[in-house]
Image (cartoon, rainbow, N blue to C red; front, top):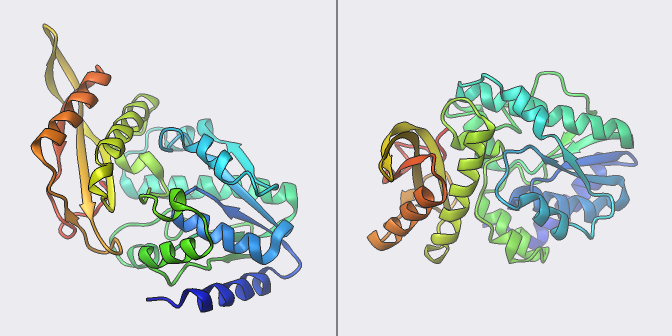
Length: 305
């Protein structure tokens, strides 16, 4: 395990030395990785850092409001409404890798726009070791690694968390006193709900996925999962009232893991699963079926795309 005190001291020097007298922006998603990187960078260079939260429209329910409240102490925080631009970038895209690349490129363009406004030369990211392993191999591109465009308008990219696993990042977050709402937070993919929607991303699918994810997170909180979520995987026939419907199929997934490299599907009691399906189908008339995914990693990945 990482020596937290030594790590923090080393990274404060690394960030300050890497940025020097220049200005930097940091990609702040609100997850434990980017939040920990932001806290380190803010401590290292203070007002030279502009944290940027991009509202992509692909986020969890209430995410933007929570970011605004949690990071209000950072005076330079920027919240960018880019929902329309991300949906435009994803219009007609169905291939998972192309989705990730489209999202990665749009993120970079948003950060470049803010960087030009504040005169920033550097980009700080919360990339961690599993992101690099999966992107450099043949598993999948992470939007902040393999999903980056070839041309990036920054002098350099600083990644202080690049050699840590998720459990080690949590240790650093606790040491920085970020609070349980951040340090113990369930992982959420950088591309957001886009990788929890099989096929093209639309506003309708996003609305269904966002509400279904909220139900799953609330109902499975007592199981303390590594990650629990809902994904739209297609359509199937169902019955609502006296009417036949061709509605969305929602898959529920809940896993246990230490570092995200491997994972085991959790055993969830039948009553809880029935409550989840009842809420998801009852609260959204366009959902016809709810399934529970019992596949471990490997052979599956944790997310669907």
